[in-house]
Amino acid sequence: MSPLSPPSPWERALRVLTANAVVDGYNDLPSALRSLVGGPVGAGQLAGFELDRHQPRTRTDLRRLAQGRVGAQFWSARVPSGPVAGPAPGDALLATLQQIDLVHLMVRQHADRMTLVRTPAELAAALHEGRIGALIGAGGRAALGESLAVLRVLFRLGVRFLTLTGFGALDGFGRDVLREMNRIGMLVDLSHVADATSREVLLTGTLPVVFSHSSARTLCDHPGNVPDDLLAELADNGGACLAAFTPELVSARRYDWVREGRPGPPPPVTLAEVADHLDHLREVAGVLHVGLGGAFDGGDDMPDGLSDVSCYPALFAELASRHWSDGELAGLAGGNVIRVLRAVESGAELGVQ
Image 1 (cartoon, rainbow, N blue to C red):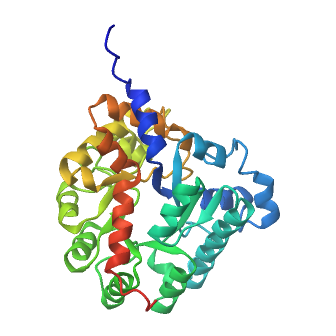
Image 2: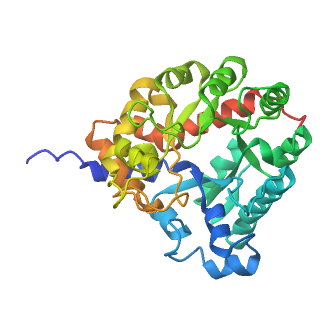
């Protein structure tokens, strides 16, 4: 009798993702839905999208999340650019609150398939129950209105990471925000934050951080990507870089095309190039400090082979063919992010939120 042949990369990918669902760190569906209706999304409008069916106008719906083995998702409540948000801090906070409300509405309308997650224990329960754990991330100084009270209220509403965009070098309020986030257990997100600010946070903060949707700047010199020196610091910090799939963050050719306003069709970007970034993040930051922040529904297109949230098995099959072990793939899927969330919770001054 001939020995059994080893599993194919696809079989390994499905095996790993069956046991270790994806915890994706960034999805722009709330903002995409807002853009589609031209403003805040109410219950009637959301029902019209039928998120439990295939949605051709978005890259995310409940069926494709299940196909992609996504067990938990950070939904972005970012401040949209342009006239919808407006220039005033109050307008930015209003837009943030409306998107948080939309996430709560999504959970209520699909309570059999989704549940709001505020703690690592609730995340573990959601994964065990087979319901998608819905977490919320917010972004930008403008959303806070220069008030720590707003930060605490956002936390009570379920926001579990805040992106420190808009702070520049950390001034007095910025340092107060960082200390308060560490105190209450809100995860610090450094994606698309100035390098100097990121370095200061890593130097002065007390808890692990994430880059929620950034890739490797060595491979693509986009300012939203992370340089190697900051990636290397993640090992000491205990945090993680969650690779984004946004084409201009993945491909140097695509970024040059966008930056220079070149004519003609955009250069294609592929799943293999995303895998190249993940290989680099694993090499520089370490395999315990890599995760996934696909940033679906945040732009016009996505890499070939990663068109929507159902495509995670294909990415894992590619990585399996590149000799990622099952344990490394499990950490990438969600284990590394869950470890960060637990570390932030345990390091916070619990009970004083």
